Image: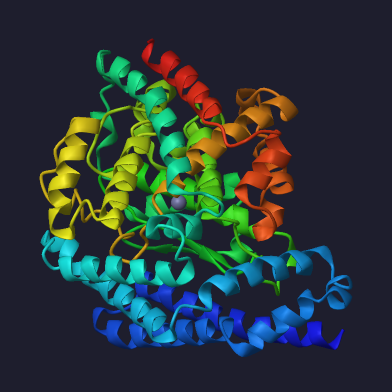
Amino acid sequence: MEQLKNFKDFIKKIENLRQASLILKWDMETCMPKNGAEANIAAITYLSNEAFKLSISDEMKNYLDELSKEQNFSKMDNIFKTMIIKEKKEFDKTKNVPLELATHMTEVCQRSQNTWFSAKPENNFNKMIPYFREIVMLAKEISRYKDPNKSAYDVLIDKFEQDMDTQSVEKLFSELKDGIVPLIEAISEKKQFDDSKFKGTFEKYRQKELSYYFMDVVGYDLNSGVLGEAQHPFAMGNSPFDVRITTNYHLDDVRPALFSILHECGHAIYEQNLSTNLVGTFLNRGTTMGMHESQSRFYENIIGRNKNFWVNHYDKLGQILPYFKSIPRDEFYRGVNKVEPSLVRIQADELTYNLHIIIRFELEKALFDGTLSVKDLPTAWHDKMKSYLGVEPTSHQCGVLQDVHWPSGLFGYFPSYALGNIYSGQFLMQIEKELGNFDELLINQKIPKITSWLTKNIHQYGKMKTPKEIIRDTCNSEIDVKPIIKYYTNKFTELYDL
Ligand SMILES: [Zn+2]
């Protein structure tokens, strides 16, 4: 079919532009000289803009209209059929957004993120106020163009987590909170582990060696990936053949790099295992950020913080960093699972992490429904941290300015993290049903078997299925908070003798 062949060429043009702008973003976060920012931002803006123009062009509309016609549609394979349906839906939403508005948003977000790079170390919230105000205003305006019948925040949530809305998130998060708060309270009455031993001096080259070891253990493919360094660890890719990850080495503590490597590998393994049949379509990436987080947090927590994972790998840690030879494995296990309310999300333990997300969700929601103004954000942040976690930020740096998401315009993204935790609990439960006891799988070094299960049920589909469809087909269930609560309860009851 001539039409389909031309459409495939057209998709390639858009994907090429996206690929180029992604690599420039990688450059910006990993190795760009400070003075290179202006030129780099200009290039990213230009390329993203060109890709966006094509995605809302008449040419795109014609292809989608033509290929939707029954005589053409029936001739396409299932992948293209699914893509046409999804793209048409997306096109109908974005076509109404004026190009100048979208371009302006991209540019503001780039500048805002670049300002945050200095505002955070300077502890200067005022520097971010005009950016946050403008981003919220622009995001509201764009959301109105996309779907005037929905609240702006609903549109934003749906952007990162398809078929999800504020009300559903509220309901799931309230169940999550009800399940974890009693555990956190019970733990606070117990004798706390002393993890002061974990602080020391750990040279970067040794931590790097450790990173490569664990990338190999979990099956990250270095022929289709590379490890870099960035202030805030992330993974990025545009096809299964090039999925890059970064980490951040703390010279006084090995845990942040170690667990961020496992986390980012989870994201990357998801995309490296996409079906290659999806290459050349818009479906060749993880389906939503929530599903992505379910995979990253699966490798980081459910695998990496499991006692039995370390049965086979603790000696290697001692070989690379002899310091750990003096710490018994069990003590190490307790040290990487210590539950203690803290200020910084990315350093939070598995349990309190969820509260960090719930706080951000509630603040974002308030910013968008108008009940909170940007200038009051630090105070609101402070109050919620105190009331939910019992800790008080001593600076903006470890408070409202700690994350890159808001400065780069990613409002509506945060709920994905805790939704990912919820999904990961459901996958764990299903794996145990189908493959047997999870602890034994880890003792017997069956990570490849676990990854194959995840690939068969999740990874290979890319954006072919929504999270709800994946969970329905895989677990025969709706989205359900109970499995992750059960996992937390079992794990921490044993750990803290609750
Ligand atoms: Zn992540």
